[in-house]
Structures are given as structure tokens and as C-alpha cells.
Image (cartoon, rainbow, N blue to C red):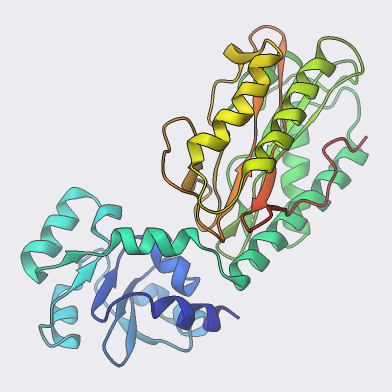
Amino acid sequence: MFKDHYFLKRKTLPPCTLLLAPSNVAWLTGFDSAYLLIGKDEDYLMVPELEYERAKESVPWINVIKTRRRMLPIKEVKELCNNEPMMADLKYLDFNTAIRLITDLGAGDVSNMVKEERMKKDEYEVKMIKRALEMSEKAFLETWNELKEGMSELEAAGLLEYKMREMGATWFAFPTIVAFGKNSSKPHAVPGKNVFDKGKIALFDFGAKCGPYNSDITRTYVPDKRPYVEWMDAVLEAINAALKVLKPGVKGSEVDGVAREVIKEYGFGDAFVHGLGHGVGIDIHEPPYLAPSYDLPVPMGAVVTVEPGVYFPGEGGVRVEQLVYVNAKPLVLNSTNVVWW
């Protein structure tokens, strides 16, 4: 339950910690329209009146108090913490808010501690992410079975999102990408009027939310002809190479480099134009990253994407994305095969 997750994670933060960033509050409580004060003896979820009833139902194990909407709870925090030294998630906030907390509360920064703990998913978090992924995959397979030649990208994206909601998704991790034919050469393609044709590439990038947790998956259909099969071979081999080195303590840049080298060997190095992957959790993109510039270690318990892709303007592109739990041996959370048709 979220309650158990809350009390497990809150122990890692010092007393008199104020969390204001919605993603950080959601990470601990599952509720994002609030501020959270971790006190010495009791904790407080501070919400505007219009969120009070929903907060009381959602987070019954925390004291819920009303605060003024869009106002920093400076007075309330001083009273509840008896003017004790404060900490806050300053790096997650805009400059003016951070300065106000430093000036009025003498707040120190707890952002790095929060970031480290958010990267290490506990059992409950992995369960929620996996459930979100299962919704996504089941919705995709149903969508694929109903996909007809002549259906537009917009229609396919709408159908897939409808199916995810039907499976129980609370929302979508990001706007669904469906790209047919030449449109697949754009990593962040916007669905339009291009129509599905089994003789052309069809790329789907999508994810459901389960509660506040996200999933992320990409699947690409390629017709059995050159050069599409070579593009797919390169991407799949890059995934396998990355999984062989992905383990706790390895630098994100190292994992990216291994996958990138495979794609270079195929002669497609210039076509791999983004990082290999990113963390997934409360935010759809969060640390750690598998990217050339990320020289920090990947921690035990992280959930990351491994998503190499190759893109050729005017021709098309292929990307395949797996969601992976970082353990002594990486665990791929997906149940749908990368080639499903």
C-alpha cells in the first residue's frame, strides 16, 4: 500500500522537511496538489480548501490542513516546526520560491537526498510501474488487432489511448506518438493524417499511468524488406548489448556507449540522435539517465528505459523501448515481445 511506501521513504528525510514540488509530494503520498511537511512527531499535508475532501480520502494517514491557495505556507510551517531549522526541495523549485524559503525559513536544501531516494524504487513502486506497463501493453495489442490499413495516425493514437483508459489507466504518461511511414523518422513525431500501410513502418510510443506512476514503451512494426530489417536488427542488437552491461554502479554514459557502438558498427551511428534511456517513475523522465553526458552511476533499484533508435529523414525510423529494473541482473519488465506480429 502507498501508506507503507510513505513510512518507508519518509525515514530517509530529516525532520522539518518541506516538500513543495508536485512530483516530490506525489512520490511520498500519491497526491500532488499539496505541500508536505515532515515534522518531528507528525506530518502535515497542506492543501487549498478545494482539495481538502479529496486529500482526506486519498491520504488518511497524514494530518490534512487547509492553507491559502497559491500561497507559500510560511506562517504554518513556522508554527508547526516551532522555528526549528528547515529543509526543502529547493532545486526542484523556481528561483523566487527557493529564495523566499531560504530568506523566510532559513531553509537548507534536501534536493539531492530526495533525488537519490526517488531513483531507488521500492517493491511497491516497481509493482505500480509494472501494472502501468501491463495496461499499456494489453491496450497496444488490442489496438494492433483492430488496426486497419487506411487508419490515420490520429485515429490509431486515439484508439490506443482509449484502450489504456479502458484497462484502468489514470492518465497517459505523455501524448501518445503514432508515426506511419516517413513520419517515423522524427523521434518526437506528432500524429497526423498519414495512414497505416503494412508495406511501411509503423512506430508507436506510449505509456499509461497507474496512480502517479508512469510507464514508457515503444514498439515499431517493420515490413520484411530492406533496409528496414537492418535498422531493426541494429536496434535490437544494441538493446541486448546494453542489457549485458547494465548493472548497479555502472555509469549511465558507459551503457549508452556500448549500445551506440553497436549501431555504429552497422553504419548507422549518425542516425542515433538521442540518449539510450532515462529513469521512469513519478516523472516520465527522471534520473538516472543512460546518455553520453551522464557520468554518474546507475543505482540498484532504478527503473530505466533502454530505447535505441535510428532515424533517416525522408525514409523512416525504428525505435524499440524496453523498461528495465536495475538489479544484480537487469530485469526486463515488458511482457510484449519486440516483434509481436
